[in-house]
Length: 141
Image 1 (cartoon, rainbow, N blue to C red):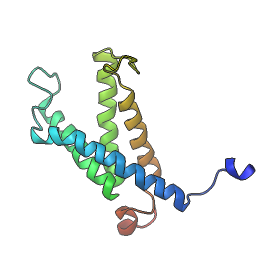
Image 2 (cartoon, one colour):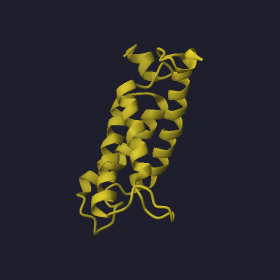
Image 3 (spheres, rainbow, N blue to C red):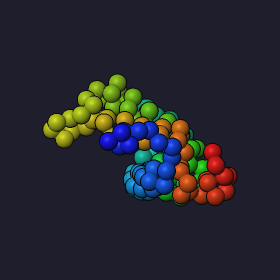
Image 4 (cartoon, rainbow, N blue to C red):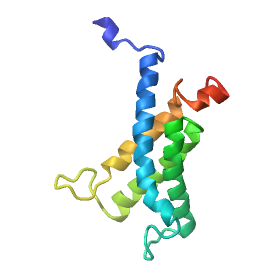
């Protein structure tokens, strides 16, 4: 029983979980970023208060960050870009649009942005794990 709750060093199992998480979240960000990368300067619409250069950076962070996570290449940088995006998303939903954290009726909320923010933050702190190009190219972090 004690072994179940003991804190362990990084194991192959943890690295496999990091790999699966990177693939799933990376794929989600490629899909989220695809429409934005098609029109990077105008994807928020003409009425948006966000400057077009920041819209383009957000599109690149989502689309490029997704590939970065999947490949495990420059993972911390890609995850940092996603973190910045998600901080803005949380701020916009919470303070500008006044959305709740969770919307029981299925409307707008910012829970998914918080979840993505924390996943990306985890990757910034922990790194991509041993099954990554970062590990192959740059060695152990």
